[in-house]
Length: 162
Image: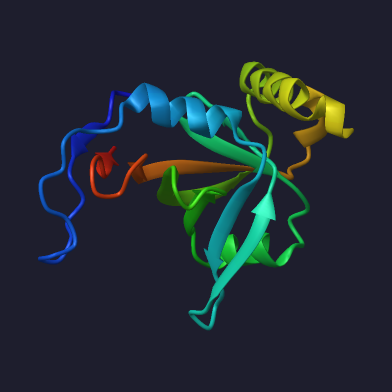
């Protein structure tokens, strides 16, 4: 994936005056890699949001999570692939907006990389999947369209566009 375009998010007059910098892509990528808990928002068929905490991994500038295709959020994604992924902090903010798809059987190299990232992050919490775990589905990929991030809302709100 090519590097994202960096810009300032649009805010109404009076919300932001005199920002002094941007969050670096390296900071955002590191936060997405190191986070343990992510909030996933999908859209129900009736148009209402559905939010759920998930474990996941950031690999090759995509967010991956796994689970049963029968879950509410998986069924929502089948109907409408638009999702948002938000990290836990309300101060150091990272909000990924993108599209999600179920992977029927990920390529072996990618599955190995994802399994390794999960194991490094979650083995101490009791979860260490193998690459073959997703051979029959159950793995989801979020492709970012934009990411909003800031470490201080008034100083460095940043928008990354892909």
